[in-house]
Image: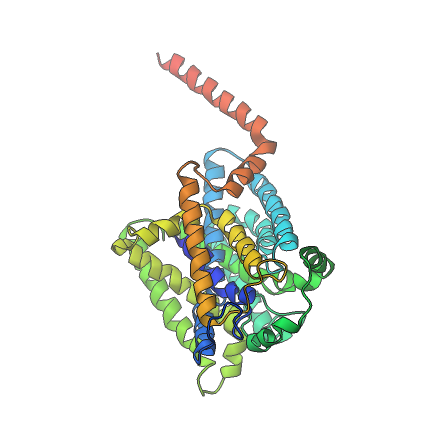
Length: 393
């Protein structure tokens, strides 16, 4: 369910890019006086926060994969490195054919570096996490990879200047789909600046934090897990929320918090979102209809992540249905509609299959090079159990 929330929350951030933000609405939806405020509120709630949550959960998944490998006697991290290479290829395809703000390539590259560290004892893993966080903070505070330094192109979740871009929407030439693909590939390094330069230290910190939270028992049902959840909620939201709204208040230091908002403050809020969601779930908040549908999205997270971008691209691109630009009402409605579509599609699919369509293909590709060795290992285990049974009798 947490993964489902992260997927839908990330769409709430990116939907403004697809629809063109505020401005003249081609569907006839009126532009109200609250358009800018709604867009600002959406950014405050989602920009960078759910991406941070998704990164933490990626680390949790990595920890689960590590424990599974240890139980089955697999060499770590060889199988996981192959998995990361496949994710890198998948990310490049998604980047080239769908959107330029794909996160999968960056995740794959960082995962290749982080995965071997999981063999460390927990105390040394804490040190590695602290070092990754310190490196990220140093680069942010020094301005090396801060928001002001990101001049290669627009941020994928940047809410600035949307109104101006929307006003010029109809005057811009409409590229074909293949021209967009060629443009993304031709501008590959500039388009990947965030994923390859800015985010890696932060992703490493969040991945390792997810591993440590899993090892600390955050997702168990005991009192220690409940206490840790409350601390995450209080600490993350108690520190992150005031810092998030600081830049919008007439207070000194607003420019500093603005520069740190997406890459430093937003991850703090993500930890708060994680803790708060777990607190609510343990109080019986995960049994409702919407909660179950979000869990379906989480079980098919990779498929839903790619599907939501494909659907939005078809609906709002110039070569597609060209429904944008929309005002705030239309944009929020589009987010709700696509989110509902994801929930419906995931629910129907999971009635017949255990995993999403991309997950099924993914699992087959991940296991393919190791299938022969796995069969031999399983045969040896059965023979060993047979010999042990004969000896006992």
